[in-house]
Length: 173
Ligand SMILES: [Cu+2]
Image 1 (cartoon, rainbow, N blue to C red):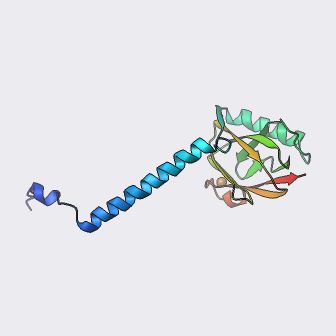
Image 2: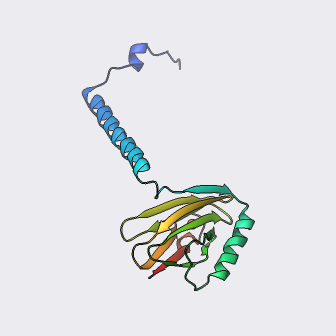
């Protein structure tokens, strides 16, 4: 079989009407998405996720989270105390955080082993999503305006027990 090079006209065809219309629609969507993203970034500084990052060895962070977990087990975490939350196959340490309503807390999140995801959904539609990489800690500022129980879910597939990786935030008066 012999291959013949194609002529330039065979490669470059002018747009059909449908192709041109789709291109215009795609450009409009891209424009709307970039505008809303930039506007949100400028207007809502408090909900930027994460607000801070730092490098940390997984075992060092795990120890911090374990110590924090033991110190505040069953207790309401006071205002101004930084929270340390570690994701590890297949649980969160601590598995439950008791927080006060209306108080802004800084939660440091990291992983003790593989890649995890921190996903927190609020009743008011607030969503926090952070990718949790081992070796990095991410700070997220959270504030709850309503009491109740909020779930922390791992949103990055991390192994066979991934679906059981559910933490809890209990917000009290
Ligand atoms: Cu997971």
